[in-house]
Image (cartoon, rainbow, N blue to C red; front, side, top):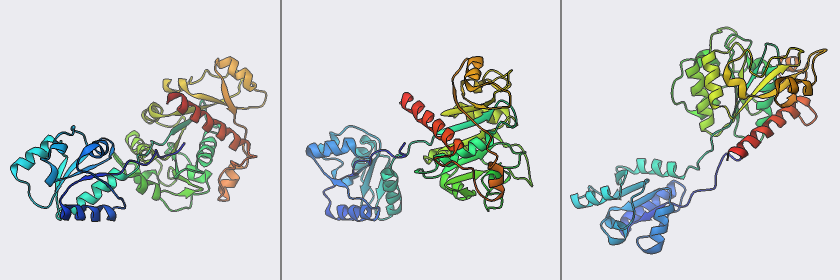
Length: 357
């Protein structure tokens, strides 16, 4: 999945004032773009319809071709000085979001142009991983999923929601790495800058991890969790959230309500619980992964018991913890069963995305 759509059409500049036009072309060149210039005819109408931003010179506001254009969003009037009342009225008719007076508003105009040229970013996908009981290997699977999703991405965020646990950074071998943990971010609310967040966290193999602190354990606030997840997703980055049974009900519900894919790990016991039993109702739609146990059911038998298909089997990865203690993350290579399961789950995520499109 590409994080970007096709590049936008060029900006439109409509002005016959040579000095104003020279100033605008200079500013746009500084912003790294070359606009389409038109003041009349089909070229003006087409560019006005398609351009991500329209810059109308004050000199053309009262011209017949410009007055005949329909109102639209993303129109800025540019003037070399204060506008007389009739021209102000024409700017209002065009639905202009602002009148930029040069040179005083040059900084604002360059920023507005840069914003218009920024390619739209698809929201990053959100995967939630939980278990129907403790010790099911949920954290290992969450870490493996994040590592498998990292190649070709602009970074993946792995979020630990067990504020009382040992910390997912240990599993990645990053427990001694510098970076923020949950105690420093528990007060976050509302909008957060995704780039700054990712840069402030420990990072391993393209995965930035927000983990609990072993020295200052505490519950992960639902509002802070929502802010962190949204910050990464808004920048087009995939997010994997480890949701153990110890995670708060409010935090769990907040993540599952937005998840593109929920994965529930269930043990292959003879008395296997129905999907989501013992957990809150939102897990009822989760995809199932079976954790084999000695003398337990087969994957097919688990599917028969719960009445739902099973996407895969999570075997015991005895190397995960020792690798973490050695500063090495779980193996997700081509020959790794954990890597194969992770890629199968990511393929399911892509299939779900395709079906929803």
